[in-house]
Every structure is written in structure tokens, then in C-alpha cells.
Image 1 (cartoon, rainbow, N blue to C red):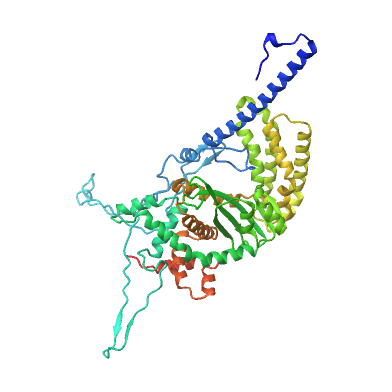
Image 2: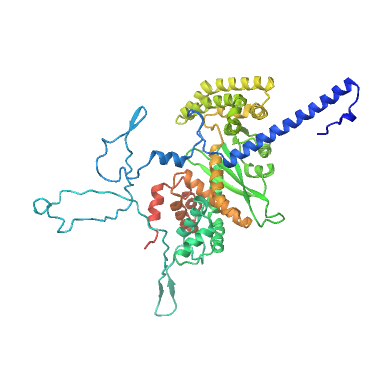
Length: 531
């Protein structure tokens, strides 16, 4: 700021007052910039260093905690419930109630390996009288064991037959493989997929695990296998996409992915994995698609055949789809609520009074989410009636209060911005109250984005567009299998084995995740050759 020197000041009082007023305006503008920058800094520090686990509104105060420490404090001993002795009389006094130790019985379906210990002949003599001791029972305890990942070779032998006339020879047929001529079996391919995309284990680590078993499986080979599986899974993906377009509720979100070798783009450029979630309740579908852009035209290309309700955030890239297909927007309330939650998280203790408006907004959201908690097990019509009866009046009071606060000229800039966002999208934020099937937020799509983001922290980027496209395809089938209740490894192994041999559309349809039961998957997986 330019400060006038005493020599440059005019003698006129009015002129001096004008200079003072100009300097005060400049100071006020700089103070506003500093306050905005401080708010951003506090937010970035919270995002980078602060706790991230968030207790949902409607369950008391919003809490942020270290889950590992919480569980460790509640579980200081790991021996309770591992033997057959009766501990029912033992309790730990906790404020207002007595907590009995939890019984941690290991799952019955796990194979048991018995290790027996008996007294020696000398130990079987009574220490008091010398008579032989009789066995009167046993004490049993159980521990969980593990056999590390084991590789084995499946040798396929096809019998050859010939006639003595030397005019006829036949060879027994064998099922087609997902990657003909490859050494990768369906269950190995499924394991690579699940480890990378579900468990976040990148290919270079899988390469090292194989090396410990004396196998040479370079990551380049593993990557080629994954890319080759895209064509195998494509027919299943097409049918899943048909089911997505057949339903009138869709959820959408996106997350970034870096692709190093995209034509005409720098390696540092960011592309996108688009998430579409939909399908009827008994046929849930999750689709993930790789695209170079997050533009509105890209979004429309993925939603061009969709009609109905679109649940999403307030990003402008959905506007074309909404306008062209006349969609009903249902904006995510989690996004609006987080704006207020972030204000409370970033305010220092001595500044808490400045967050009074954010605190009040959170109170309103607690009431709304509490209603959703009550409605989660209801039928759609019952849920709609409950929302109309309880949620709509709360929304009316919420919006009226927010409008009065903004009209009154609230000075705290972040609170003003959060309230403005709420008011600007008040209709679409309340649209979930129009249909009992609609969710209050887009959290289901965000969960898929988070799954991708957690794995992406380990593999960081895709080398080529082909790799990114194959990753999206695999995510689509994996996530759809998971949301339909399958063991994702077994399901992937079964469909990779059967898709190459599917001779009809009906056969492919039978492999869709909602057409296969978990029992059917387990039975087919049990038929795989094992040592």
C-alpha cells in the first residue's frame, strides 16, 4: 500500500479526509483478502493434517477420531473367548453399566488343524500318592493360522485318438481360456485384479510377491493380461449398462486419474474415471468409465440415454445432460453440509463464536439426517410419507432462517458462502423429498470414488489409455459384484472362466451379478482344479 509522505499531504482538511478514507478502504480490502487466505490455509491444513473420519449427523455431536486407537482401547486383551472356559461371570465396570467380554469365536467354516498335547508317562503319576492319573477332559483354545499365497500349475491334458486306418484322428476338446495361449488361468487373473483394484496392491508389489515363490512375473506381463481381459468382460459390461439405462434413478460422480501416454497431452495431465451408479434395488449396477475430460459433453455422452432423477453434486458439467434429457436434479446434501462442517473444523477455539451460523446449520442437518436414519428400513411410500411429514417442515424453517441470516449481512465470509450455496440450490437439495426411492446424498457414488482413490494412492497412474480403459472395465465388474453381495475374487474367477465359453446371450445374462447367487458362485468355484 502506498503511504503518503508528510511532504506530499495537502493542507486542505477535506482533502486529508479523502486520503484517510481511501487508505481505510485499501486496508479493509487487504484485510478481506488476508481473511480469505487464512480461511483457505486453515482448510488445507485440516485436510492435510486433521482427522478425517466423520461421525454422521444425527448420532450426537459430529466427532472425529482415530479408529485404531479407539478399538485398541476397547480391546486390550486378545485372549478373551479363545478357549472353552466359562467367562460369563467376569465383567468390566464401565460408567452406568457392566460390559461383558465379547466372545470372539473363530468362523466355523474354517478348516481346523488339531495340535494335541498330552502328559508324558512320568507326568501321569499323582504328585501326592503316586497313583496313575486318569484323563477327565480337555482344555481347548484356538488361534488363527494362515498359508501364504500359493502358486501352482494347472496342466491341461487333451487325449489324442487315431484309427488304425490312418484316416481319422481326434483330440479331446478343452474349455476356451480368457487369454488363449497365455499362462494365466482365470483364478490367477481374478487374483491379480482383486489385489490391485480392490486391495490396492500395485503390480510391482505383486511381482515381488511372485518372486518370493521363485516365479518370474514381471509387471509388464501382468499389465498386458489385465488389458487383454477388457475384451472378455465387455459383453457383461454392455448388459450392465443396459440395466443402468432401464431405471429412472442414477447417481454420478468422478475422480481423477493420470495417464502418462495420451496422444497430444502432457504426462502430467489429469483425466477422469466417471462413476455411474443405478439399476433397480434388486439389480444394482456400478459402471466406471475412463475419459480424457470432465466436460459437460463427456458427461452427456455417458448419460445420453438416461431419463429420470440424477443424483450428483452441483458441478456444472452435468448441466447439458439435465437440459437435453430434461432430468430432475437431486443435489447431494453431504456436499452442502460439509461446507458448514469444514468451517467448524478450521476455526480455532477462540474463534468458535464466529461459527455460530455454521453450527446452527449443522443442527438443522442433524435433524434431517436423523429422519433418514428412521426411514432407512421403510418401503419407499412409507419413506416418502415420513419425509413429507417431518423433513419438509424442517427444510422450510432451515431455508427461512438461512435467508434471514444472509439478508442481515453476516460478516463471516465462509459462513456467508456456505449459506449462499444452500440457498442457490435449495430446490434441488430438497428434491429427494419428492420420491421415497431417492437418497439424501450422493454418498454411494462417493464410496466408489473413494475405493478408486485408495487404490490409486498405490499405483499412482496408468501408463496408457488402454490400461486406464481396462482398469475402468474391471472396476465396473468388481464394484457391481461387491454391491450384489458376492465374494469378488470367486465371482471374477467364475465369470472369467465362463465368459469365453458363452455361446448365447442368455448364457452371458446368466452371469450378471444379480443373476448368480453366492451359492452358485461358490459351487462353480469349488470345481476349479486345485492341488
